[in-house]
Amino acid sequence: MLAFKMIPSDPPKAISLSIVIPIYNEAEVMPVLQQRLITVLDRMPERVEIVFVDDGSNDNSLVLAHQFDGGTSDVTVVSLSRNFGKEAATSAGLQHAKGLAVILLDADLQDPPELIPAMVSAWRKGFDIVNMQRRQRLGESWIKRTSAACFYRLLNIMSDHAIPENVGDFRLLSREVVDHINELPERNRYMKGLLNWPGFEQTTLPFDREPRAAGDTKWNYFKLVGLAIDGITSFSIKPLRLATVVGSLCAGWALTFGAWIMIKTVLWGEPMQGYPTIMIAILALGGLQLLAIGILGEYLGRVFVEVKGRPTYLVKQLEQRKASQLVEQN
Ligand code: UDP
Ligand code: MG
Image 1: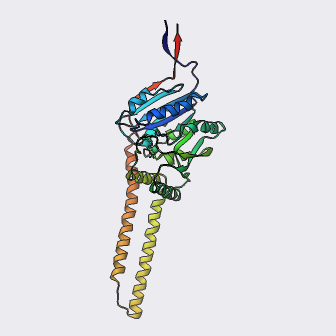
Image 2 (image 1 turned 180 degrees about the vertical axis):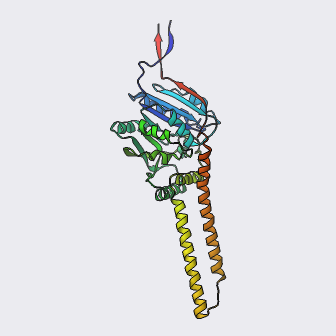
Image 3 (image 1 turned 135 degrees about the vertical axis):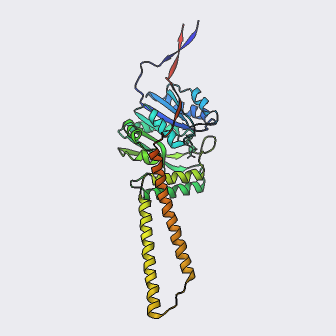
């Protein structure tokens, strides 16, 4: 009689590669992801593990992750207790990944899985970080492209060490780098910055970013502005310095202008005039003061979050499945 028995793949090799995929309401895209990702991974000689982090999805994504057929790869499903945001989900994935190299991949196939072998061969050549740089941003509006360009420019002016432009979270990290990132205690996990912080040997491969395969983006402009502010304030104190410099310049200008008016009145007897000048000065200074207080507030808020020391995410359930083979028994 024919019977099939599930046996774990033997002998167990160490996991060489972990693919970390945060998912938040990605049910629509999961079948396509399954097909494209597994086609690539099944052809690779390495032992691979796929780590799904379900970031509190309220559609069918978690069920689909549990049912995900990893082919020759192990599958781990980390399900978070609620939606903690992509940065926290990515941190959870990095904490649970066991591979000697870890690749961060978006579920929506904007990061083509077909590039994984090229990333792995760059890692085998000795690079610790393989950054994937977008050559084009297909399917993104003109506004999004322009605002992204402005954001990267600003981020690089403001932050203390260069963060490569147009490199998203899609990248490969060696075990050493992942361990260092996992040890970082901060709660405010701005990934683009954190991933660059450790340094090590890096290389950058260009790629064309495709439009989303299905479903909708989980970001809106409000969230993106929040992310941008997080990015700048968690990696630099230059805005504080800028506030001091602008404040001093304004004060200097006010003193000089005041002195000039006094001289004019005393020496030439010119009557004081200029309601508009006073209004402009008051408004400009008021605005600058509010801006400076806002910047202080941003940093104070960050200190508040760090001091509370709450965990970045909570895991509700963890499932680990070994790659299994269907073995025919007689
Ligand atoms: N994502 C997440 N938690 C969130 C928002 C997004 O885990 O709160 C995941 C999402 O499922 C996807 C990835 O992060 O795998 C990128 O999200 P999205 O494609 O919406 O962002 P975009 O590509 O528009 O920047
Ligand atoms: Mg996307």
